[in-house]
Image 1 (tube, rainbow, N blue to C red):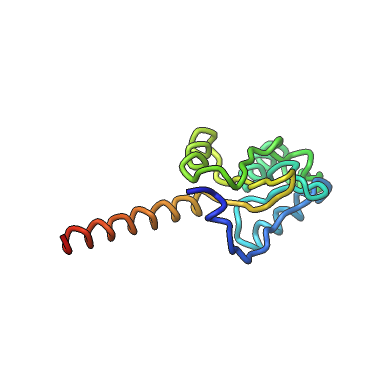
Image 2: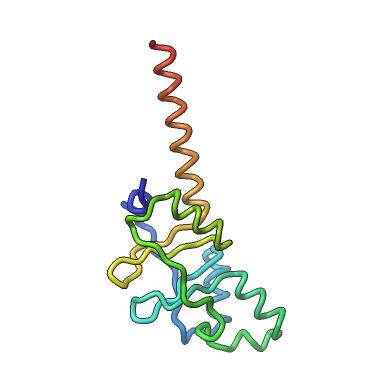
Length: 142
């Protein structure tokens, strides 16, 4: 199954920030929305990722003065991205290898979706459960 299946029909707005936004503003968005990562968009294109890890590391290293700096100076860039034709297992493997928890989905240079490792694991678990139910039905009806 592909990432397109996971992001199709989603109505949620993707919370993002811009490279010129302050780290303080990005941290506020993370906290208010109870999320762990923001895609950093520059005119609709993914310029990078700003995560709670980025925030923690830069504050630990430089102190609270870093909160006034622009996100573009501290974000993880370039962002590791996928497209909607990527298979779920490939995306999970990429996340595991690169030790990341979020992937922007990019189509024609623009952000088309955003998936977390939780989204992908839930999808895989649902698929496994469905397969098990089909097998049980086959065995009991056979």
